[in-house]
Picture 1 (cartoon, rainbow, N blue to C red):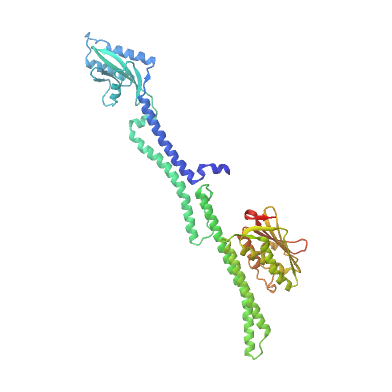
Picture 2: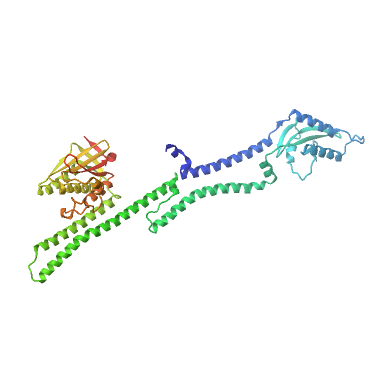
Length: 474
């Protein structure tokens, strides 16, 4: 994983940076090569011995008298001999008269050579080797013909590569070659950037049309910024889908739960009206039933609002430093009044003081719901214990009630979930207290679980809050 982070191609920034950096390096390298080539062509080298012998033979050929016996060699003969030498060597040769600078070419003038280079070396005392394009020349070698001093330059072909010969014959071919290579590379870079963005765009459009289960596929597997954005999109999509589905389930549960008390309320109102029409005295039982069902509906609506606030607060919580020991103390003190009315006791154990950062309102709501739930189903005793381990602050709420079936322990935190025996409408619960506590603890980055207490056969609910923002005072 650490090696992957060091890979420059694992990020969009690194990929673009390396791309343009390499482009600049290539441009500098090409410029250096061209400059170096020009410099090499300007450099003078020592003539090898084997070429010195060849040049000496050429001088003898040029200075040799005419076959007709005349002592003066005509210009046409000189040109003819130069052309013969050039043809045999497959490279141009030429003579430059030192006094006047007149050049005698041993090749067709259609072949262009920089004559200025020869003029620069005209007065050198020794012969050198130097490059001109795909030729190497040796000279100047002084030869005397008809009493005039000439500087002889003898050419020899080099063996350039195929690409060099191709571009030398037609330099304009460099332009389409560069366009094709750069076009392919730029197309590849553009395609690797645009393709995942189009995939992300299509997924965004599908989500806007209502498909909340949409996710980005291959683009999310990338290791650069586009891959991170795609994974964030997938996480957002799953969270939105989970939130919407949860709201739909909650709405369905509310509709189902309100149907029964409303039906009984309507029935009780109907019986009361019928009794009044028949002239019978008001039935107190019916009025009490109406009052009870109305209070239950009010309680249910209040709990639904609490659950909705807890779910919403998971994204907008206000963490502040607080004394966890005192917060739990206030919750247990309030719960004791309710427990005393039912001849039950609430015991609070806190061996040490613990401070942390959390949303006090949400945390208070969670603990109050857990303690009230324990009072409701306990036989006589409820224990609230505050402790901590190496990584968490731990709050335990233990009762001595009938406990919960092991198969249903993970389901009791779902909204409107009731156990077949312990939870019923006669107990006054609507199945929202533990759901509210669950959402409130999750909003504070904690965890909550329930298990059966083996000592007193009751239920034990455990809250754990991480030490990431906790300060401990021992």
